[in-house]
Length: 200
Image (cartoon, rainbow, N blue to C red; front, side, top):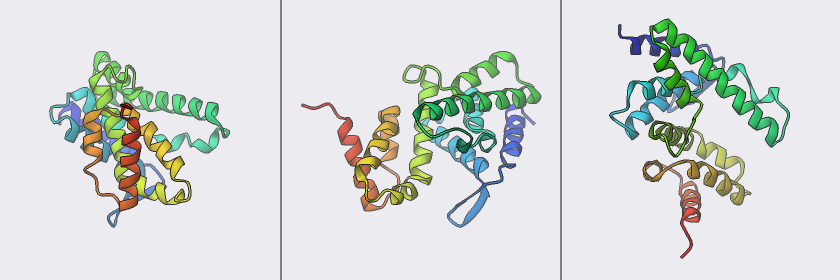
């Protein structure tokens, strides 16, 4: 077994411990395992020639996410940002440990951690590909359900979409427009994208 496949096996086994489940098209799986596989698939669609470090990061980007729930932190933006930062370090730490077990050296592990921590976004092409893929996973698997919760607040949805779309580049936007949405869902995405265009 190659080191890459060994690492994938370790990542997947860890994520299959997620007590939460996610159902998609009639199939249920441990939530973080399912999302990790989908993120990996999106990275390959965005960058068919993705290097090994990016593939490793894609399969471990949110590894063990259920272990530090949002509910453990108070409401508000500052606690939320603190949670996100601590969570990213948690993911990077687990990925590093499992990669060491799979036989990877320090240089590769450090590179994967950079991508997981999303350092130098908009500058590092691998980090940008990861951000595109993360947003596409949300749009494909969670957006429509999320939108229904705030149908009476379209402005709020557009604002959230704008924040996600701002993190993406033109390639990510192109893929985002190919996903199957409801008519209302697609119109909100178009409106959010149009709001990002420079005013004449």
